Amino acid sequence: FMPPSLTGKDMWGATPLDQLICRIELRRMGYDGPYTPPSTRRTLVYPGNLGVFNWGGVAVDPVRQIMVGTPAFLAFTFQLIPRTDATANVVSAGASEHWNENHGAAYAVKIGPFLSPLGLPCQAPPWGAIAGVDLRTGQRAWTHRHGTVRDQMPSFLPIPFPMGVASLGGPLITAGGVAFYSGTLDNYLRAYDVTSGRKLWQSRLPAGGQATPMTYRIHGKQFVVVAAGGHGSFGTTLGDSLVAYELK
Image (cartoon, rainbow, N blue to C red):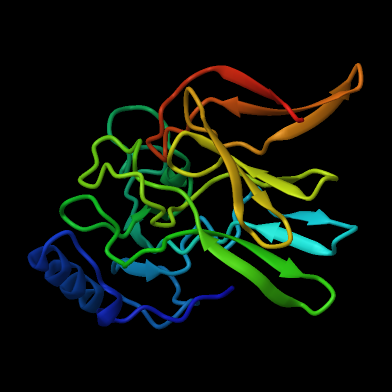
């Protein structure tokens, strides 16, 4: 799932000027492939700190021998900021502490996605996918773009087309061979056929579902539950809902 290194032809934008600026910025940055170390010069990190696979990990169907994951392909930029004060904030605005302030060290780290002036990723989509791997052969069985920018605010492309967006959260696989996932940038829980990857169903959530779904059984009925709380760093809709679905 490791993507090839980015080049100027991979740059993308809502306008030709947007694309040109992204190409110029790519040439200005330090970038020697996936293991480029950060420095005081702005550095491209690709894959970025969301992946390829994020903290949600993967799910495995032990009967069908299929592993399902959600690889992310969003480039980030890193820059080391020299410190003159071990405790002062030099990256985050205001007085609130931020994890990449790196207090007590010689440098703070300025981290963010590689975006165009219009706030869109500089690289062409897809920026994320859902994929299945056949564990018997070790080969990729299927890969599909998933997620839209429908619920991104602000967004210059508020359209419900499956562009393939970055995501945060893990999949859940049930014994019936269905994979559930809710971590995309739009407010949806989706279900996929584990064997083919075909989307079977989707349902709107009241907020971002950047979490891993869970399942349980009670009184002979099985439910799938999602914590729809949103995510500040992703800019998804915030909330405090637990949404349960009965499986039929």
